[in-house]
Length: 153
Image 1: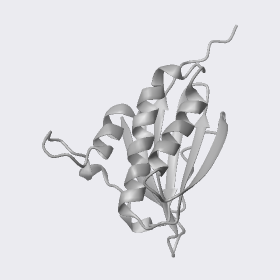
Image 2: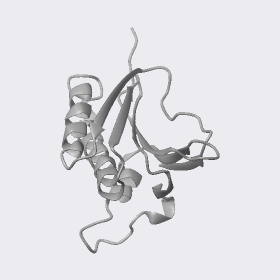
Image 3: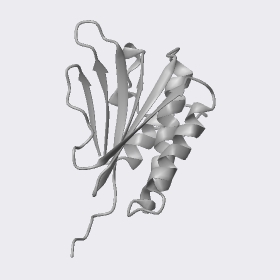
Image 4: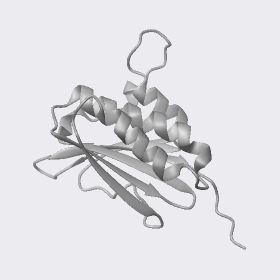
């Protein structure tokens, strides 16, 4: 697993070899469930069906964190479905609450704080970007899951 944390300008974690989908959600308690259903609908019945559960869990955690820890009016979800990878990013307007690799939980005590631990365990890579150069405007937390390898005949 690889984690990456950058500040702007940074390259998008989304690869150009896939199909991109976007969803904007109001920052409500329902946002995580809606994002989870969105990702599920994109991956079910595709060669990436085997990673649907991991993708659902990870996007739920990241969107729930954006809802819980920011006052951003919108939470934006971007999904790129490639042949070998699925990358999901969640963007909010609170740039200085980016997670750090050192914040990953290592104990099994307590009810909260499992989001980064799940990303660390399930994603092939994850990270966060603060965007906006001198005046940061938003942050993105992203993760990539390794999907099925396409077989060409």
